[in-house]
Amino acid sequence: MTNVQSSPNCLNPNFGHWDLGIHWTLGFGHWGFNNHYQGMRWYQTAWGVALLGLSALVILAVAVFAVVTVKFWWQIKRGQGTFLQQEFYGGFDRDPKATGKAAETIDRNVLEDGDFPFLGNPLAPVRIVVFGDFRCPNTKAAWPILQRLVNTYGYKVKLIFRNFPVESTHPGANKLAEIGVCAYEQEKYMQAHNYLFTNQANLPTYLTALDLAALAKDIGLDLDKLNKCLSANSTLVKVSRDYADGFKYGAAGTPTFFINGQKVQGVVPWEVWEKFVKELK
Image (cartoon, rainbow, N blue to C red; front, side, top):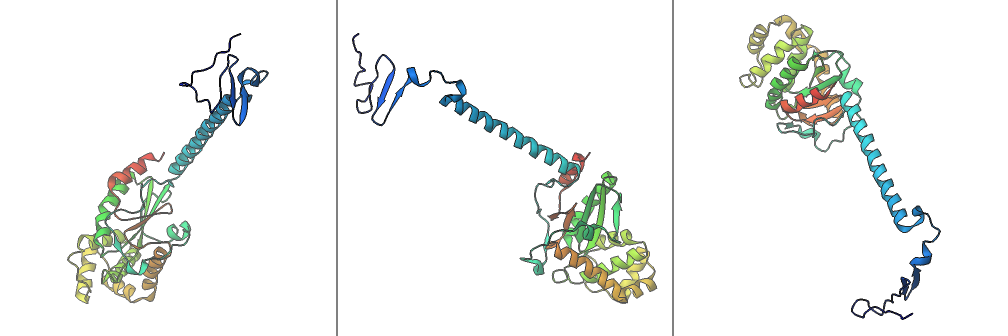
């Protein structure tokens, strides 16, 4: 048989040569296609191993996707997902004392279970704790959105109010928080809450006896009970406890929300709240 050699233009002689037996000789090894795959199963070949490896990666990716999807669905159903898209929104008054403060592990029992004012369904699957400041314009801006949320989806939501008066930024905030506590004792919390926000810009920084009398009349509070409550040490203790709990769990200003234990800061838009609640079954 006449040997046929490849043209130098097609194969560099430094690497080897082809013969009619499809025999490739390298300077560092020997690969004979005629004999190498004889008697081997497909999965023992190089392309078979590569195909199996690729298949395993695809199966693994599908499994991971399924697990993540199921986990996300379960979290959303329990109101624990990352449903608010981000942890910080615009409209936030920062407390200078909270700068650099590391939050402790959140205990929802401490945050949610107590004799706190609330709106909505006490057995709702979603519990929203709002730490607010009656002197804070951003807390005021958040209130109409929260009110709409409760009015629309109150059967799914329990909205809990707690105090976080940032006195250094909003002088007089502590006194208004105490008035809220006293109004709650007279079962007039929401009346006081709405009045203090509605009249936020007109309230003097430090209330006189005449200011308190006018406020009590407008809200419908018993003035004598209000004055006694404001002079009681237990009232300040309640406000301080609220502030301490918020500070401990990472509240750095107002408004700060804890939605089933997940912290979100700033004024959350209505569209975000609605999207979250609608995803709950």
